Amino acid sequence: MRLERDTLKRIVHGALTARPDEIGCDECFEQLDRFVETTLAGKNAAEAMPLVQDHLDRCSDCREEFEALLAALRALA
Ligand SMILES: [Zn+2]
Picture 1 (spheres, rainbow, N blue to C red):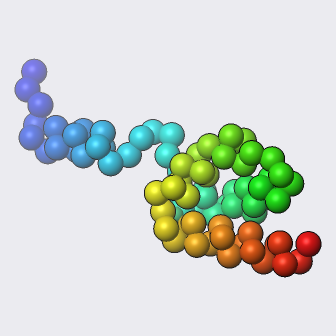
Picture 2 (cartoon, helix red, strand yellow; picture 1 turned 90 degrees about the horizontal axis):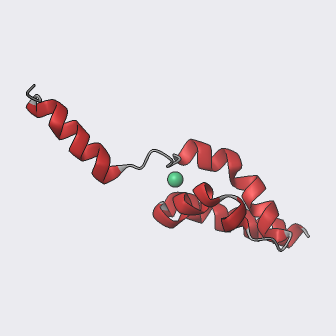
């Protein structure tokens, strides 16, 4: 059996750029309010929701979103 070059390229690309348990911006955003609430409750949000933390570490857009939401909810509290 011989792998097509394109198939091989896709496999290598996938292995280098994404892990199967990664979430995207949409999923991150969906869970962001819960993540912020957990943080505000003084709990370890990174431990409770590691996939969101993982995404925030890599995505500056979502990190800004998180910080803005955190600041807004802190101001309300
Ligand atoms: Zn993102």
